Length: 121
Ligand SMILES: [Zn+2]
Image (cartoon, rainbow, N blue to C red):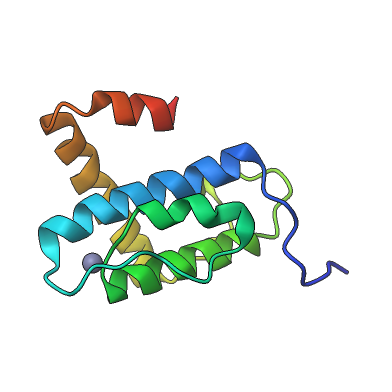
């Protein structure tokens, strides 16, 4: 039996969530008009995600993604899009795809390849 305590995340896992938070923040600023705030109540190991603010519904989405990730049952984490478990609700899976597609392009357009480079490689 696994305990309910989240185990420490690897750097790769933290980086994955950082990319998601960054991309969600970029997407949110261009699509949503609600008040934008930092994530709060994050586990200490993820406190660096606080620098990517987004609106209430995007924060819900990110908290959900973080939660799923912390509770992922697989030892060797595959890239989520290749995962067999499909832990995200299907509407959230669609949202992840849309966010990644939009924000990837937006960062390239803004000449922020350095950011992509930094996070993806
Ligand atoms: Zn938003």
